[in-house]
Image (cartoon, rainbow, N blue to C red; front, top):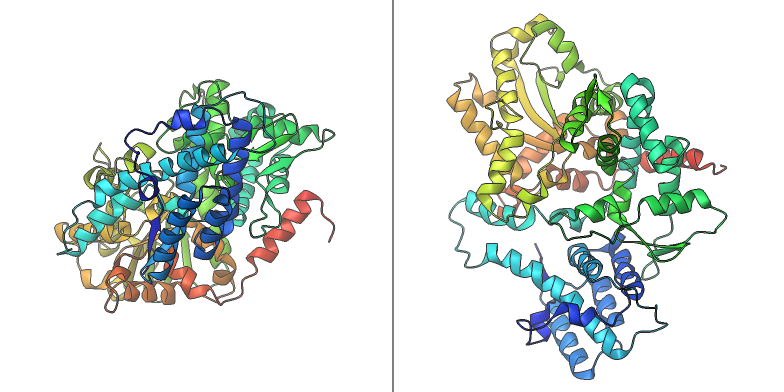
Length: 565
């Protein structure tokens, strides 16, 4: 396991306590600054963990820096690259986004320069490193004075708070899974009476004639050839394409009233910077990909609140209210059920949705039920999000409480996730499930699974921490035959989508995957494997198995974009 080491301001300069980032950026036109930093971020969109690329990027940036500084940079870089335990990092999404926020807070209307002077390039380099130093110092507050781990939970208490807010920025958002989820959502909107109205309001706000046009605009702007050191961050739109220009304008950040936020909320909502009438810069390509689906629920919420839309006769007054409506009306029945059906409809499993079971046993039903002979898979689906405010506390107890609120029991005492699963298992022990599935459940092995949508729950240690709680709840509630209940597994819904063709064509099976994962996280040979998220395990397990997902998705996108075969 390698540890990422970032080059920071203090590694190269001695005036961190007195340096003023506002002065550093004062004479650098924003119209130069934004394209520069977004260019570097675009280069790591696909290859952000590539150490050789990171070295190339700092060498490229430092070409006109003073000779003594270049020497320092080379010495630092060489030392880190030579260490087999470390991996050199210069450009990261986190530092880049923090720097973009700093640039926007110090926005100016200076005329764009053909080239920056060497002094301006040096100041720009310093200003970027200040952003890196800022988050490294904040992370260091958690990691400072770490004592040797005496228990597994000591590792979790250290790793979780220092990574849960940043791991999202070390991954590449998969536009294929976003597209599939968006397609299901918009199709649902067309079929649901109230969401038809919401869709009309949303499209009117964006000046679009259809949801297909919304997706077409995003995908046609995003899907491109990502070439090493040649991925553009600025796009020029011909004036004849007014619809695309208007669309990008809607997604462009508003400078007036801009302020930094812990989870980059304004950049997530508006991930474009308008440089001129026809030139636009992608502030972050991951955030732009999010607009395909992940951002839709938040955009819908904002638009519906703004337009005083109603749900069942009551005015929608907040984003939180709509997200609850979105979860209840669509995410489980319109998305989760559809994905699971596609994955497993060819199997010979005994399958029941939560709605099916609820009609028979009234309460205590799982969100999804699968039985494969003597193996029972119980799924709880959670379309919930851990707030940026909680993640960025970097405090274990606060983060743990936030996770428990979403996946164990909320502040009102309502069972969530884990406690819903234990309640379902109790129903099985009480023979309630025999009302719809005539089987001797005392002979079965039960697999409890939480399917989630928030990437934060992929952070190493979350599954371990929640399984520990799950086993304690089983004991406290005295649920029988505990030895026949497997450990808890957390699965990202995107993993079912990403590998849906492999599940559907039986190239991978639930039993083999779950048993393999549970065996792997015992960590007999490697301590850190105990905390591995399922996302990493299934990726490693399937990386050599051919999937049709890309082919099928690209064909659908080609049809949407009107590209001939």
